Length: 305
Image (tube, rainbow, N blue to C red; front, side, top):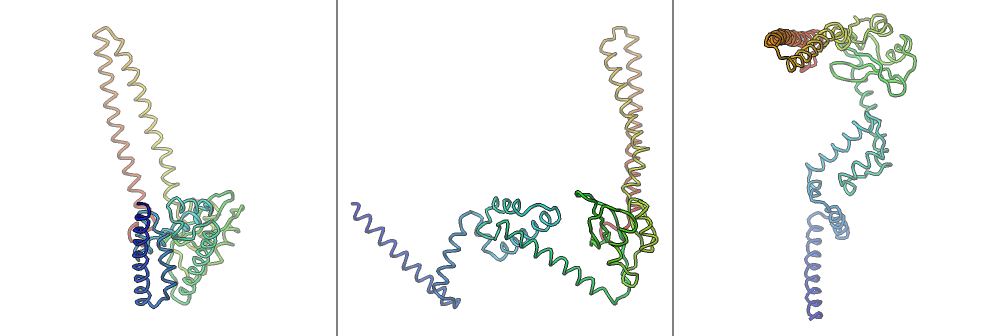
C-alpha cells in the first residue's frame, strides 16, 4: 500500500513540475526574460507570500503605498523626531515587511541620509528658482525649542517652510542675525511682519534685521489674559463649590425646620451664582476664541497673510 501511495505522489509531483515548467516557458516567452530568471523571480515571490496581506504589496497601488509608508516613517520619526534606526527597523519587522523592504538598521540609516540630502537639495533648488523675481512676501515666526541645547528656528508661517534651524546656547540678537542673514536679503524677500514671544532679541531681529513690524504671538497674549481673568473665574468656581459642600453637610445633620429652610435658601442662592459664573466663563472662552481668530497672522484655510 505504501508503494502505491508513493508512486501516486511521485506522479502528482511530476505533473505539477511539468505544469510549472510550462508556466515558466510561457512567462519567459511573453516577457522576453530568460527561463532561469523567471524561475528565480517566482521563487522570490513565493518566499514573500508568507502573510495574508502579502498579495497587496505585489500590486502597483500597494507598492506605491508601501513606499509612502517607509518615507513617511523615516521623515516624521527618524528625521523630525530623532528616533534611532534600530527602533524604526523593529517597527517595520513588527509589520512583517522584512521580505518587502530593506529594513535593517543600517539600510534605514543610509536611506535617512539620502532623504535629508534630497530635502536640502530641494530647498536649494527652490531658493535658486526664487532669485531674480520680484520680492516674495513672507510672514516669519521665530522661536527657540529645546532638545538638550536651545535650537533657533525661523519659519515661514503661511507655508511652514523652515528658513533656518541651528543649535545655539547664546540667544542674543547677534546669534539670531547670524542664522537669519544666511538666507535673508531684501531683494528676494519682503517680510511683512515677524511673530515671536516678545523677547528683546527677537523684537530687535524683526525691527532692525528684517525691517518689519514685530507682532506678539497669540499664545503668550492669551496666556497673559488667562492668568488674570481665567484664574479668577476658576477660583470663584472652587469657592462656590466648597461653600455648597459645607451647606449640603449642614443640611444632612439639621433637625430644625427653620434651619433646613434657611440652608436650602442659601444653597439656591449659591446655585444661582454658579449658573451666572458658568455663563461668564462661557463668554470668556468665546472671547478668547474670537480674539485668537482676529489676531491670527494668516488665514487658516487659504494660508494667505
